[in-house]
Length: 256
Length: 291
Image (cartoon, rainbow over all chains, first blue to last red; front, top):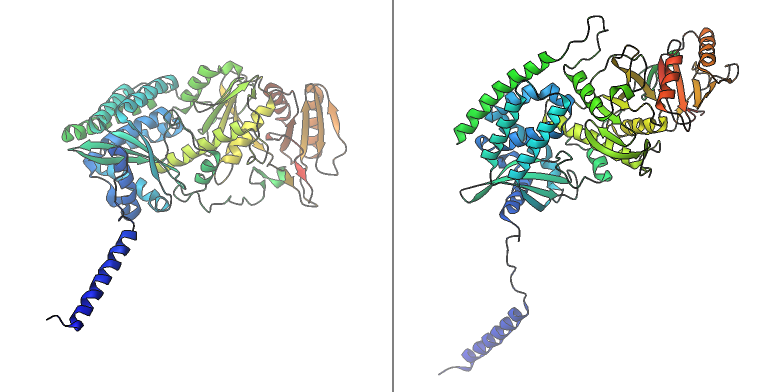
């Protein structure tokens, strides 16, 4: 009953099936997407960077999550920042610290400042360390330093102790993740904390005081950052002082 | 816990503000007779004095009259260490860097350890200026041991100037004035590669080359009579007065300390020249380039 016309297509179908099987046997296995083999805090930091690359400041967590990082950053500043800046700005910075919206604004500005640079910088997480011992370290350095410089008076003890408590309460169990980048900003430090099984990113900076930074940046990196757009130092030139000997020697020519 | 954290933030700030105002009030005011500084930051003098006493001792600073101490990055150089603010930044031995490798980026030929330390400090200042309500300092204040080789002082000053973004800083050296107070002696640096003078410019370009116990006085102006030499401070003082009589409108002198000259000797020359030529420019080599 089977007509030769009908048997011909069936033969073709077998041939086609054989070819298909043969072809599929030559194909590589479909790519399997695997999560990076890194600790969860580093994956969270890496995701944050990808998020910033795509959406900038929308990646910043709600304001109430961020006070601990702000406290840690202020302590690190007291421990390694410029005493001139501390004398100038500490009251205003502490006032800002008391306002969660301003704390959030500070991190949003930091993220926005570096967002466009981070897009092409190829940042990869390289290490992480628990943040609790770092809080104690910066507190200890800041305390010793303020005492030595003569600034440990008028309630500075209460200030540092308050910042330490806040940093521990809000960042406790968290990590500081370091990411190295091929281009500016070259390095990122991202703070994470775990809440209900989820790792949140609660802080970011591009530079830590030298006492926390075991591996200082290379000279070329520092040079490039000193002329970078995020720091507002790109395309800047020495203002010409009329009638002066030279920008280095700002003495009127007639007195030289 | 969230509300507790926020509450503690508020309390903290109130305590802190009150406390900080207390700190500011606690600092001694400058005496009424002192000239008003161009820029005064309450507490800065105290910080500098405490720091210098801790790492060097103010009695080891060179002696000069100087002016008011204004805020800026302060760099301390002892015979065995360089510190930027209070952070150790380079090791020295007998006042010279233990690693004298020159940074190729440093046009004046300063050692890499100084160049890197100062670059890093400017980067920290730049990052700080974005994070907090402050600006990148415009001044660098050098507190150095009086017996430090003058060459080291100049190398550090050049490193600070060549690495600052946008434009070089204003430079001052911390000194003890004759009444024992802490003052700042401002100075300029000959730009790396020297100054190019145009033909017919009205520049005198008075220069004193200093070697131990010997001073050679010359000038860039071809009409300047001749080179003169002095071997005592009195002779140098007399030459300075003579030159001032010939060029009463000139206020500046370029000082080139040679090998073996210490900061103390350099500052002696500053003091000798000061009544006639109060503006001081320091350099490490010939400072005039002819086009």
